[in-house]
Length: 448
Image 1 (cartoon, helix red, strand yellow):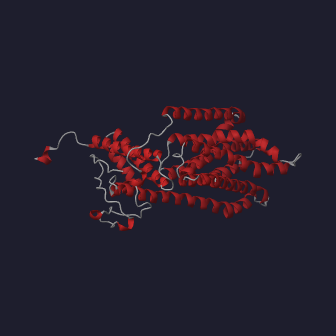
Image 2 (tube, rainbow, N blue to C red):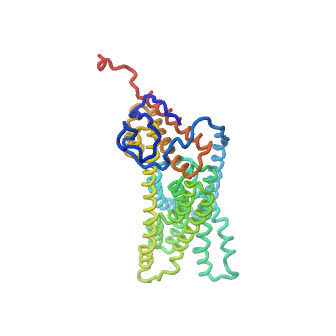
Image 3 (cartoon, rainbow, N blue to C red):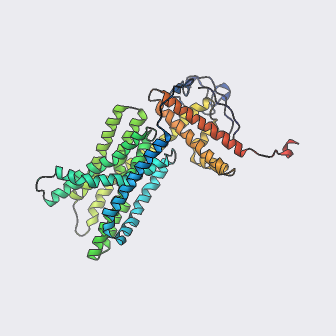
């Protein structure tokens, strides 16, 4: 890969590309001897040149308009399913009950969406896929669960089950198996659309959490509506508030934690570019999600209930079993976020040695605070400059994460084409920002 041109721009000038050496042969903090301001260990001593250069063979690509049409049809079909769910499932509860249930369900889903936003904002995913994931969870997976859940329960139930047996099989067997399977179908659909949507563990976790959050949102509406009806029937509002407390405040991340395990497995397999890992980790993550879901639902059948204090037994179980599980999965999510920053530092510094970025630019791309400052600076030169800066940041982040994934596989014409496209975007964004931020009138006072 040849060194890039050096157009004028708002960011510090990039250094000249140094000779390709082993990482341990490169003097640290010595730009004059081939160092790079700060240095990191190289995973691939030849990188980023390993991704290739020279003539590229033409790569067959799906038409942009065809892809947009397919995306539109997929989202439209999910919207139709949402409308059917409202007409046949939610609307029969009554307008007043539906509004109460919908309002109450906004509380847990807002908590979940804020957590997903924090996890995703460092390497943001395309908005259309984020919307698709949430709608799939809220409509697609719920619709499939309602459609096939009854058949599955009838299949696993004895001929004439007792009421408690049917309830147990529905809660501990049918719900975990059918619900987790239908939610994970949304992840498989995203993998079908393209590996660039789920390119690593954190991508899989983000999409899985969105799907699970959407599913829990619709499910909470149904539960809250049913509880509100019961509260009206017995004339006791505590029935509703108990359900809201358990589902809305104590367990907003329950479904998210289950499905995230499948997303984590598929994300690791996508990063490693291994078909065998797709099956192994995908099925393993799905199975573990089903087990945790069954453990959560089954707790109500094994916990001793004190008539004087019905909530005491559940709270003891919740604090001793579920809270540690949620805390462990939350720690994994935070570690994945920290890991992303380390990956970007390592990969972008490789491009810096090749002349694409200066150390200060790499630091800017790594820091959320510095990214905001850069966008704020660009905004002083107009909305177009800010859009260019935002696209520059996004393209650079994609470049670093794509290159990290490519190191686990063999570079192909398609991966080299993708790298070139991102580098061309970066160059075009630099020129755009530089042109918009350059002074139009020469300052004669400083030149006199």
